[in-house]
Image (cartoon, rainbow over all chains, first blue to last red; front, side):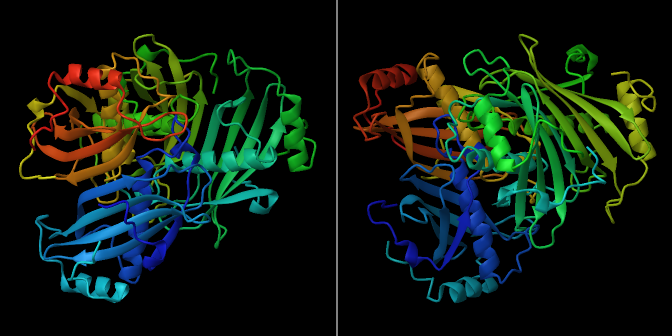
Length: 153
Length: 153
Length: 153
Length: 153
């Protein structure tokens, strides 16, 4: 991940505000590093809801996280207006790549960027399977571009 | 605490929206009971900021929680618009009582009500002390009524 | 709840160590007040597993929390050995009362005490029902005393 | 990170048990992906305490996380005995690399592996600085090998 060549928040169609909580702040006075993943996770849930037109069944999730790669760029503080930007960068054979950013809304300051590899699974035996056609279609329609060709990063 | 005789959200001058996170949801599909306290804690931080005109020093907190009494009334779900209502009910010799509610904003459904006893302490030796005059004044000014006389509940 | 007349840890048959996490510590340097409920919740899960001989189905829980009343007595710090003590105090018509304590294991220092009202529900319509006989029996057998008569507190 | 060529838990000198909490479990019935970072964070705190002989000042932390790369290999469940293994892989000019694994203790099943880039900072202006000599020495002494030469992975 090249943090010297970051995407622009406006490159993301999907953005949602997340809220800092008082107990997110750790002994150093900033938002603890583990909380970033709650923000990304929440942004991802809203993203999937948008991509699937609200038809996500959270009890029978067909994709699991295989890898998370997160860069910490600037500290976050209680009370800041943080936006999670989420997009699908690329669909592969059995997986797809999400890219996310945490951005302070007023200043535009980038707090963190994260790439997540999501793997499609058979919900019965949990084995990986090719990304189902309805997921391919929904992600492609939402992003409005061909996703089987990797986005230059 | 009498949950059959609940206050009205409009009885509270201070209200702030809190946001559910995907990982707040537990195996039963609703917001886990421990998360309610993160919401109340966050509402309390914003309330104190308002009461003290943004001059809270979170590193040197002069009041600690002595007791929390929380009633669970309706389940909360991911994506609901939850508002935390906070007010000071009463100031005693060395403590004051906060009352808080969690309310779903659109429907007005009350999710939970909570009373918290906050004790004033000397930040050096952590012993309880009379509620300082600046706190008495700030709480009374904010609520706009006499707080040494308990609110009928 | 009378915190000047606390039970003794040895009054509890069920005790389980819980572990502090680095991100449990808040800006004040002690374990945040919201974490206490994660500890009580975890102690409760282990208690129910013991009472029901490991036959808890966490997807179909027949009891819900109606009220939590928690007293904060001493601060907890990262790395302390904290034990959660849990017992059933009393079984009523449609509810039962759990009492829990957080105790530092080496010093015996009591950190917190908590009483929780659990209500039995019909898992289909979520309405309260009389505490089922198998629960009454399991709790009574585990505690080894008559629970329909309230414990003097 | 090559998850087909994982280190062995016995390659790590530092291991600490972490405990699952009931509210770590998400709607899918397994430990939520965000909790992994609480485990890694806690393992890291204990590791630093060991490396620095208990002389960590958590209020004045001289290293910050720049990047986390975490692979999810097997799901974790409530009640499993999870061990966090932590070691320093390499010390660079202004940063060092920690490698961590989550392992189920009884079965030896590897749940996750994670690499974290820690950057040394000046605690006054938060700018990156060369890894201080006392940190280099403490890490090298603890691991018992030369850390300026990268470990083959």
